[in-house]
Length: 156
Image (cartoon, rainbow, N blue to C red; front, side):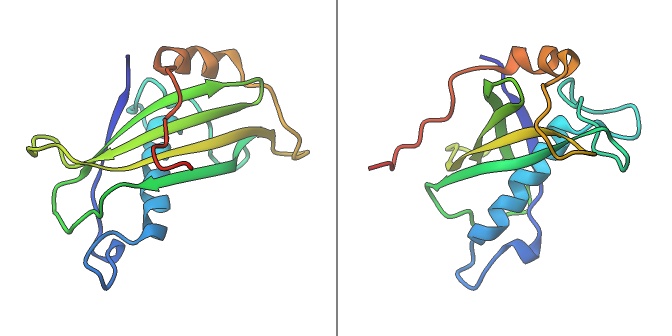
């Protein structure tokens, strides 16, 4: 099982009146992790999975088709970044499912699982807005991170 570990620092503005990360901010945190993991940076550094071109003028873009989150415990204020484990739950012809587990910062004992989530991205030709097959370069970069999709415990 190969997973990416992305560290995302929390901002003061991520917290609400209840002194934990606001549910809407969790979507932004997952977005930041997704960008670090999959969007090719302008400079030469980045994860091996960072193969998507999200710059202006890109021929293909990724659109969110679906997101699901399960909050397991509130995230309290902390200065160390949360540890987001990410993997690919499914690779289709034009879409992928990105899975996440949001944990307490590295080295914190006991390790706490705060959130499980999944995002389905559809690759789209920018000029036409129609689904486009995932290029082999992207597929090859993501296959090593393919494992079973996230399992949501609270479905009923």
